[in-house]
Structures are given as structure tokens and as C-alpha cells.
View (cartoon, rainbow, N blue to C red):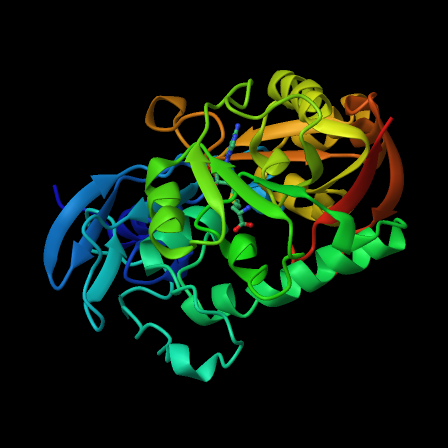
Length: 357
Ligand SMILES: C[S@@+](CC[C@H](N)C(=O)[O-])C[C@H]1O[C@@H](n2cnc3c(N)ncnc32)[C@H](O)[C@@H]1O
């Protein structure tokens, strides 16, 4: 017996494919997909007509709660390894060959970059795109490079506002320096007698700093204290651009104590964190995060499978209230807190300047 027209129509409705591609570039394709009612479908990632892989969406998408009237995990973020060529055609389809919206699409060209156009007087080379991605989550060399000097200008302004005579600084530490974005910006403005030190847990990033930034001493540090080779009270000023945004509460507490050990009494510590300006992000990525943040002042979200990542990676995103941050650094006094602003040090983050008691 054949299928009647109305049965066929009902089946088609049941197996329709909803969702769309949010972002496609050489490195990944992300978006969401669902069957009507919010069941996760099995999807094929098709590149230039060939099935590259099969996936089932599994990432929380709180923004879809309104549509499906319950918490759903319908997001996907598929990483191309190795990266695709520009112009490759990418489709996200189901087993009936149905596409999500904005699929298929072509991998767009990367923004062109001419280092000579920077004209910022800095001699440090701009890191390769994959290193940039590891620290700031995009691969745009221009956007990375233009923040180097202004980030240091921002630090100098905040130090002056805290009453620090910048020319008296002797030892400056960039904690979690990545591939030297802020370190590079100190060229020509580092006080004559000052030593610039940088540390990071990622050896690839430190290898770049060691090869390209001769005016800073950089080294690979351990994920947890101590910072080997740094004496108690040796540091006048330490800063951390988007490092505490990736640490869990117990590690924040350990690093608070260690930074208090190495910063001299009266010395300063400036750090950036995801403050109230990120409340909408917490609401989008997690069903329980907003409540947890309200109740405890802190929420750490893991963006990926815990077996495929490690603490301190950008897969961990930590959000904190200002009072949590102040309470987490009891050996420091908060002398200034700036709510999320467009500063070049770390755009959108809250900034706190502490003085060591
Ligand atoms: C978002 S990136 C920012 C890098 C750099 N501060 C910048 O602004 O370009 C965070 C950096 O913190 C580093 N990191 C994470 N946990 C760390 C830890 N416990 N000690 C030192 N570095 C850490 C990561 O390896 C990464 O390079």
C-alpha cells in the first residue's frame, strides 16, 4: 500500500530541518539544527560535495528556549583541521539532503593584512594567525596588532590615576602574556631601569615571545603557583589581560595568594574580568549560569568536552561580579574598578586596579 498524500505531508513536517549556520570561515562552521519540536538531528558536514564528517548538535543554546519552550542543546561548532581553502563550499545537511538555512555557503576570504600599514613604531612581528586565535579567539592580525600600544597606554593611564610614578617602576610582570600582545606595546615606553617579565602556560606562545620580543624576559610557567624564579616582593606592577576569565574559583584563590607573595607592599595589580557586561552572554550559553552567578558571584562555563581541553584554556569562560573579585583578593585593596568599557587592554571587560596591602 502506498503512502497517501496527507501521510507524506505529515512525515515531511516531522522530518523537516530547522536551524541555520551562524558563522563559516576557513577554521570552523557553527550554528544550530533541530527537527520540529527540538530533537537533535544527525548532520553531515559536506565540503565541496564530499561528506567530511557526521555530527549531532550538542551545545547548549539558551536563545532557542523561547522557540522550543524548554532547555535545548542544539548548537554545533565544527572545527576544520586542517583549515579549508578560501572559496570551498560547505553544506550542513541531514540524511535526506535537506540544508539548514544559510547552507551551503562559501568560505569567505580572510581580511588582507599589510604589517607596514600599522605604522605604530613597534618592531615586534605580528604573530601568525593561529597563535592570535589561541589568545584572542579571532584570526585578524590587524585587530590584534592595533591594540598593542594602546593597551600599554591604558596601563600607564591607570597607574597614574592610582598615583604611581611610572618612571619608578623596576619590575613589571605580564601574567598570562600569551604571544606578547601587551608586552610588545612596552617598546620605547618601558621606564629605563625597568625589567619586563612575561609568563604563560603555553610553550608555543612563549616560544614566539622569546624569538620576537628581546626587551622582555619570558618563560613557561605552571598552571598553578608558584611562579618559579620570582622572589617574594620582587614585582612593582603585575597585570593580567583576560587570564582570570579562564580560571576556576580554587585557582583564582591560589593565584591571588601567589600574586600577593610576589608583589611588594604598595605595589599594584591590574586585571580584567568578565563582569556584568557579559550577563547576556551567560544567559545565552547556560541555563543555570545566571542563577549561579547571582547566588555565588561566579560562574565558570565549559564550552567543550572536558576530555578535549585543559584548565586555563579559552574553552573555560569565567564570569564574576565585582564584589566576588574584590573578595577573592583579600591581601589587596581595590583602588579602582571600571565597568566594561572599550579599552584596548581588553575590550568590554571590567578592570580592577589593586594595591598590595
Ligand atoms: C585570553 S588569553 C590572553 C593573552 C594575553 N594576556 C593577551 O591579552 O593577549 C589568556 C592567556 O592566559 C594564559 N593562561 C591561562 N591560565 C594561566 C595560568 N594559570 N598561568 C599563566 N597563564 C595562563 C593562556 O595560556 C592564554 O595565553
